[in-house]
Figure 1: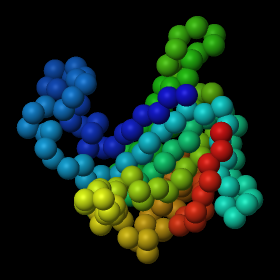
Figure 2: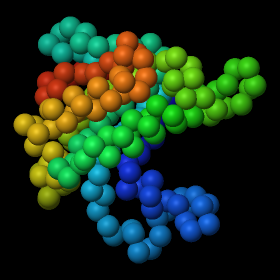
Figure 3: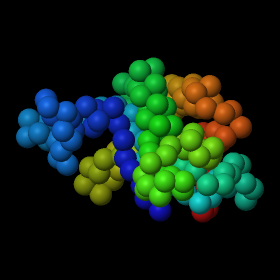
Length: 172
């Protein structure tokens, strides 16, 4: 399985003027903090989320997406993350034999979205600090709108999500 991390900020700094991609951001961007939604995307054969001893959501083959919401995130960030996750070519094309050629939508696979505020954790000494993560009272409706955006952009039945704010256990 492979995992990728995407954010609108990172995607904008990996492009150079002549449109070639680089592995590292330019020197002038290296010290900037990322201030946008984060998504960690993992290709899975199956995935499930368990809450209080019961399965809350599960998918077969597809993508497990951990979503971190920054306090400054906007609707344009949700548009970007939704478009990128659904269109990333992460799966092989069995008819042509090409690897990394088809998206989750082309394969009719599932997507399991999970809100994960810890993606915005920073260590201050030995203590985690989550002050840049979107506060829960603002994050819950924002996350629900992100899930709705995924369902409208793809098949509603193929998009599953965890339980916001719950202690979740992941299975693959």
